[in-house]
Structures are given as structure tokens and as C-alpha cells.
Length: 101
Ligand SMILES: [Zn+2]
Image (cartoon, rainbow, N blue to C red; front, top):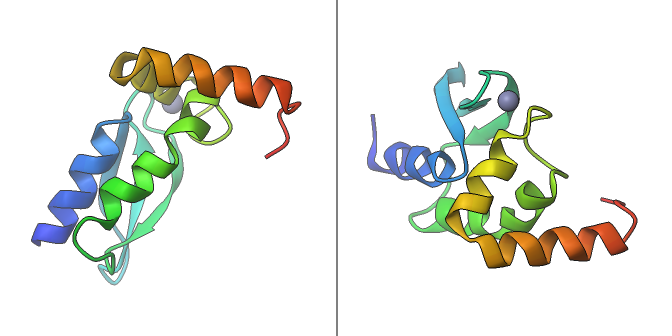
């Protein structure tokens, strides 16, 4: 397990997503919902240090509004716990946008 994979794992864990075993030759990892284990995406391990946290932070509002992440709502719960004010603001913004992604 490399440092970058640990960093990616930590970044996604903060929003309720678990990094699974490598999906393809150790370069792509499946992302699983921590709440229900459903597959919610993939991430490559070619990110540079600091990128994983930035990536997850940029997606925070989308997770908060439920536009990405798992249909069970686990990422919405996690982002709400992390930053209730940003969570509420993101939901207001995307609600007024009509939910278009
Ligand atoms: Zn889920």
C-alpha cells in the first residue's frame, strides 16, 4: 500500500466512501459506499500528493446535494456531519438550479 493510496483512502473516508481492492492492475480502485457497500465509482492511483483531498473537497457540494454518491444517502449524511453550513448552502444552491448536474 503506497502513501498516495493511503491519502486517497483517507480523503474519501471523510465523506463516507471506502476504497476497495484494486479493480484493474492496481491502478484503479473501486469506490464503495461505506453505508451500504454499493459501488459508487472508481479512482486512479496516479494522483499526486494533495490531489485526493482537493478532489473530494471540490465534490463536497455534489455529495451534500446528493448529485453524486450513493442513492442510500450515506454521503449526504457524512458531508452534513463534516460541515453543516456548507451542506445546507449546497443543497439550497442545487435545489434552485433544478437538480441539473
Ligand atoms: Zn450507500
